[in-house]
Length: 304
Image 1 (cartoon, rainbow, N blue to C red):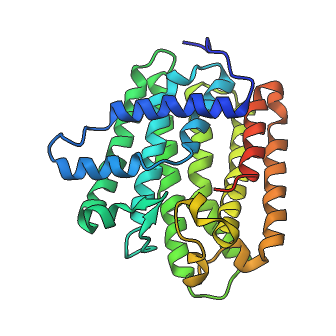
Image 2 (cartoon, rainbow, N blue to C red):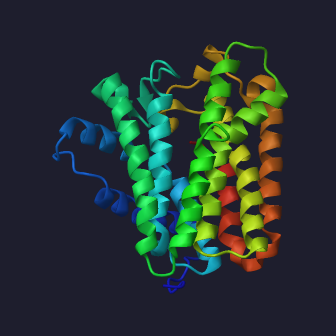
């Protein structure tokens, strides 16, 4: 099913249309809240459908479209990446981690369903994510070999060399004096690795040539870091009503953040530099990279 769908001209329309695809697919893929065991399925759906930008699955689809695939061709994998992101948020919010009472304007999973059920909901989303990735092999245009490579890519990105490693370093750094090298490493692993993997997975499924995959990889690396820097800034200056969670929590527990190391204004400049490098990385793609360029600029200016 090589790209028969026409990309919308406006990035806002693009996000709405692709976000709707993801929402509808997630609703199909997740067990209903009435399916036994009801409690864990209700907890899974509570967190998955708590809102959010659906950035990571949209990046999977946008990268696949660069190669000529239609977004529907990679929906199982796009949703898999979103489930991994959601599971990480559930576990991040636990009392043993960040101890967050709200997420996206509603009670966090452990507050609504208890700690044990929240852990199980996260575990179940993690398992379902890899099941969905494997299902992508049944889609015409996505060979089993490419799906296998995508599975390996996701596994690497969320293990100790990626997201889990970043979270471990983040916990270990809490309360320590701010350090520029440490904060960059934490953010590249904890947040950047999954964003980078989303782009690489879309490219891998679409059989991207080495130049295209390299451009997507570099874009993901720079944009992932810039995205987290903006998150750090918003925790200092953002409006809780827009963010859907309390602000100032990073400073309260002395977390390693860019504003803690560089201050807000220098952090803004670093986010702008990272975004510019992400956009520059797309040069080999020509017009095929326009959607990703627009997205990078939009994310830099976001308020939530």
